[in-house]
Image 1 (cartoon, rainbow, N blue to C red):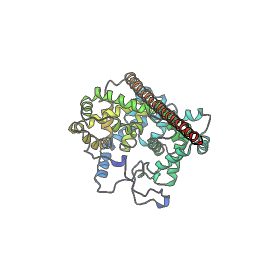
Image 2: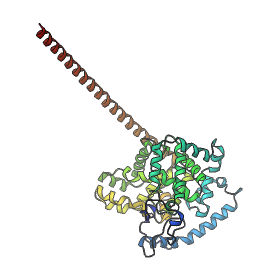
Image 3: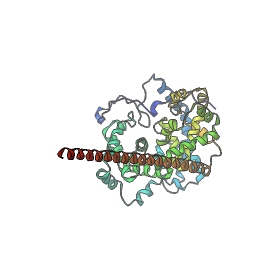
Image 4: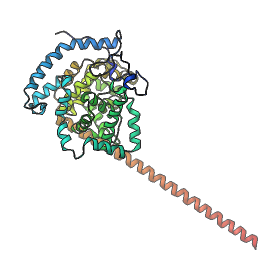
Length: 411
């Protein structure tokens, strides 16, 4: 078997803005610029990163074509068009872990997330939800959404244009109205944008976002306090101790908290930090298998960069390199193999137990913090009352003294 080429990071995952912050009209877009299959601007010829990406694409293409053939063979045998949920669980899991051909992702994601069923079951249509959102979501939420539009995949053809930003604004606004406990949180913008890239339609993207957040059970990643996200960082730490102990020990030795490295991974479902082709492979599996995939991929990344981590001798070394670790995951096939075959024995029920324990710990921390804050407020109130009482007593004494002096003068 031919080994894949050694690749540099694919900075497509979090690109610098190649245009001004103002959105462009369709006429203003540089028509000479080239874009990849997903709509992201390609680096110019001769650029080292771009050449490495193209080299890997060429190396992987024969494998991708074989997988496409097997996928389409299975697709022809579906009882109804797009009825992927009818495929036996084990077979579908294996198929999705191999990656969905991009031309079929829209169909597969909508099927495994149950988007058509959710649309039919909703008492309100997307248009009605969006109309209500425009009237009812707080101004602060709208302002936060607006601020993040131009920061979301600025090197993607769709989001360089006003129409693409309008689509993203609509999906985020509708979701803010649909999920009042969340409203808007940074990170959701990258998820919604990637759904728009793949599903191409506002309405499908909105319902897919709603379904995916519910399927993964991660709404509390985005609510005030981010309780579940903090719990999952503790859960990941426990998992790392078992599945990648050398890395866990090194992080402990240099005082690194996983939250500072991995919170962005989880809150964006890897959409912001990894090459897009790799993120799409992760989502293929995640939308069917659930939140467990977030943990598998995190451990997979740490396994692949373990040698580099062990060379870090202090906190600064780790933090300086940490941003590049997910961006180096250009070889999506290797990452998926490492995340699944390289992390055996990761049972959902065991992970849920660890997560429940972590969640209890975080909730106790929050309660203790609330009690401390309450005690501080009560102490401050007592001190304020005491000062006011003292001031009132002094004022009264002063009044008595002044009155006595006036009386004495009068006599």
